[in-house]
Amino acid sequence: MVNHLPTESATTTAIRNNAEQDEVAEHSGDGALAPWSSTDLLLAQVVDSVNTLTWITAQANSKGKVPKPEPIRRPGVGARSRRRTMSIEEIKEIDPRLRGLPDDIAMQEYRRLTGRG
Image (tube, rainbow, N blue to C red; front, side, top):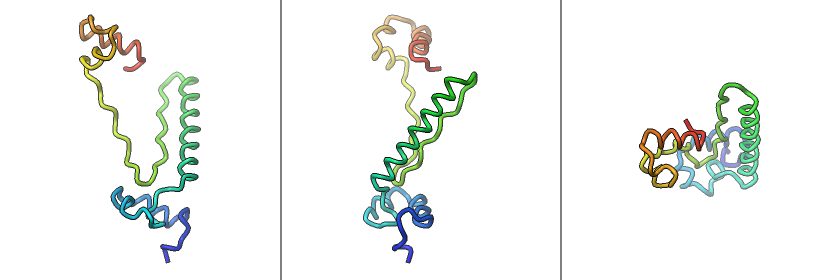
């Protein structure tokens, strides 16, 4: 009975959202665990874009830091891992302006140039 529910039904969505990634890949033809349609993915992208633009506007007009919105979870896509932090050696290798500077000054200049930290 559950197999014949529409893909957008609450039951099917709950089953799909609680499925492990390997289950989703294994049952790609199954309506309950199939990845979203291209329309669903595009709609999620639109919502994420609107949320990002709203965040940018709020960040630009506030004195404090506004938390960045989380993207809508897509079935079969794991959570994003945090970016790996680059070492000062890697930063100097990429940016020739920082190569001749001592590490602490190079890091300060990198932060000033990129607005990070």
